[in-house]
Image (cartoon, rainbow, N blue to C red; front, side):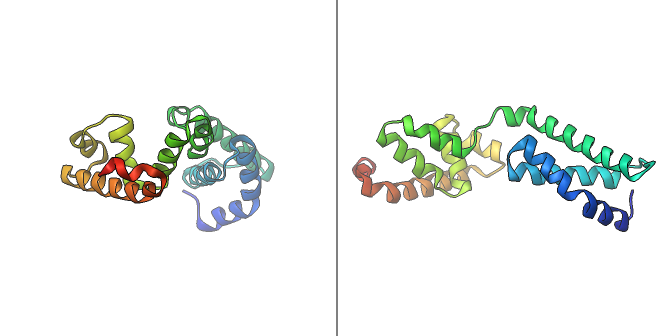
Length: 164
């Protein structure tokens, strides 16, 4: 394991290079920050001794590129869709569906999760509780509250009558 001084020196020297490499490969700030942390964690835990500063820089570049490639081909990344992409695709939906989708996406995360799992994926409250590690009654409460929030958001759009 490396000393704090070694790590601080490396961060000072290579942080800009690593961030630029990540942005070129990933085109995403959040993923860039994740890889940045991963690379420096590998450095801290690594016992590699470098022959020169050039050797050390080459190591950082290689580890960064490999980490970016690993992230790009990961199962999770290939099987998810960003919210921006969903909203852009919703332009093709009829106005009614787009408004509902935008209302669902505007819910806080904990409500959005249960609504998505229940209405879009078809899971029961019991199954959602198991997936999220929550009590079944908590899931029912989250679903009830999310319906109330959606009702308030959609009432002005002519949807209020359907919920009564």
